Length: 443
Ligand SMILES: Cc1cc2nc3c(=O)[nH]c(=O)nc-3n(C[C@H](O)[C@H](O)[C@H](O)COP(=O)(O)O)c2cc1C
Ligand code: SF4
Image 1 (cartoon, helix red, strand yellow):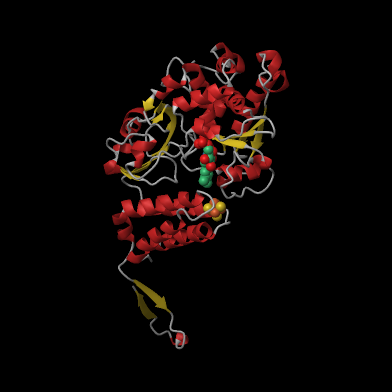
Image 2 (tube, protein in one colour):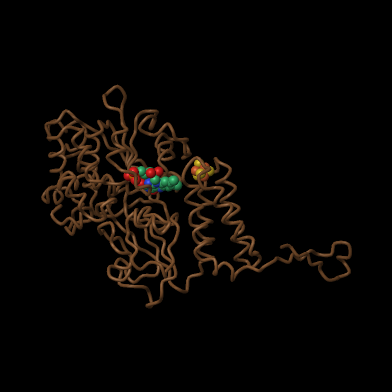
């Protein structure tokens, strides 16, 4: 299954979601291999691989696992993040649908490495289909004794783990790791302050690791081919294959598994067969709606890995690429994105709660043709004041695209605004006499 190192997650194998097919193709062998290693050796293998989290922040996975306390004094948990609610991100559900057993195997290996007692796969409640498919895979794995009490009988190990699916109620904020834990505990999904970090105080105040679905599903591949070999795939500082979900004005939207560092233009023009109607590209969001956009005229030579994108002032995020052609109204796109983040803000902290509202309000004013040139600086200033001043990163996620669009496409915004604004104030005193409105100029 892992011979072809350009496809380590979405293999070209028919019916791989079925447990028998998965086993026939070498499934659950990586877990058996891991059981011959010590937990620390497994963690070291993941460290050697250079795997970085696929949930957006690119944090080194092996390093994160070392934060978990050793020993058995307290129960330990793993939360597998499949909330996937960021506009433009739709890759984890491919794993639920086409390769759920690799995710289960990844949980077994990660669980063994960190001494996890129970794992929760968090899936957004509306994703009925993927919940059903994932549950079927879990049921089959339980029935085969691959999970739970019969693991000793099947694998000859004293290690055992329980795996549950937790359905979210449908909120973007529940993808944020502390909020996700609050939601699993049965409360409203509110982010918590960090520190303490989940490894110190996570689910029910117990040590917890939160990892993305794709991150965990990658682990069997690393154990199978070895950390060193994995580290050689793709970009050196952000190695491996990545699931790029490509949408927007392209001929062949979809999820493409490709090595990190693949050229953005290669993805758009070769894999996705070009732009709809052969139009020019106006903008590309490289990693989900929260990431600053790239201009169409700067995408030549851009490599799709975190370190390369940083040089362009943006990030790989969730690998959700949104392509916009030359006919796109960038100002309206910015308003739509700002509306989403305002709607999804949980409202706990003032800069995010108020700032997201202000950004949307200013953008609405601009789109209505009532904005002034000063509104553009005001937007950037509001975004700057949200960034870094909030409990969780939703604030940054809201600020980055607005600031990115306004600064990178300023000329588009300037076309919408005037140098000064004229208010029409009705003549109150002589209102009934139908006199002309008073014009007040505000600069
Ligand atoms: C508002 C918000 C939404 C998020 N949504 C997701 C999500 O749907 N899936 C995900 O894996 N990470 C999401 N994250 C990132 C998580 O907080 C966390 O960093 C990630 O699950 C860690 O996994 P990783 O280290 O494997 O990337 C979100 C973060 C924020 C701030
Ligand atoms: S940044 Fe926004 S979403 Fe996050 S805790 Fe504060 S108000 Fe809630």
